[in-house]
Amino acid sequence: DIQMTQSPASLSASVGDRVTITCRASQDTGYSVAWYQQKPGEVPRLVMHYASSLQRGVPSRFSGSGSGTDFTLTISSLEPEDVATYYCQSYVNARSIAFGQGTRLEI
Amino acid sequence: QVQLVQSGAEVKKPGASVKVSCKTLGYTFTGYYMHWVRQAPGQGLEWLGRINPNTSNADWPQKFQGRVTMTLDTSTSTAYMELTRLTSDDTAVYYCVRDAVKWGNWFDPWGQGTLVTVSS
Image (cartoon, rainbow over all chains, first blue to last red; front, top):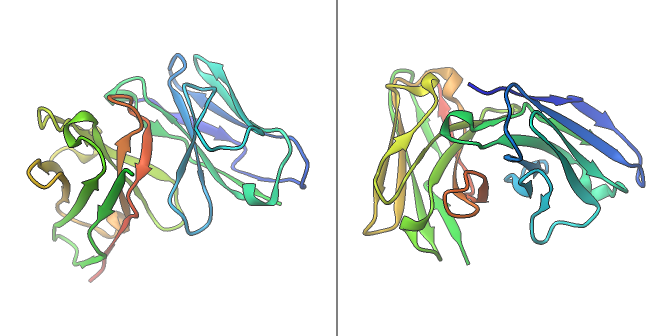
């Protein structure tokens, strides 16, 4: 089974900072990685798919990159409402659907 | 507007089973995989499996083999997930989640979640 490893596990940054979260897959996933944002007490929300395709309605300060085994989610200028836990997810096929353990982002 | 509306919270004893329902609205039920994801208190997300509403074929990780069953009622556009032989490790919020695009295997939207508590 595929393993998704995120780093760091937690991160503290300031408003306006550029923030990068990394996700590494244990096997090649092509571009089949999505990212989710989960604010405290809320349901997860899709942010990105196909590694770099921004979900409709998500602010353009969010961007994604990567392919194969290494992926990143970047927030270009951190806003207070971005405080959340972020999860990557692989989805090449049914045997490779898995989440990373999450990165907790604080201000 | 696509909506996934889940059944209410459950409290179960160890060894029991739980069945969670997910009523869908606003789209063609047979057009998208339905997945189930859970989140233990303070923990991350875990994929439980998916079901194809066209064929009723389901896939799930080996970890849940023999314990999870996913079914459908196409007449009411409702999906069900049953988990048996519950232990305290199964205490979690269980979400039904739809493919964001047909057969895509990434998730949007999400149901509101169903808290399942396993306690003696």
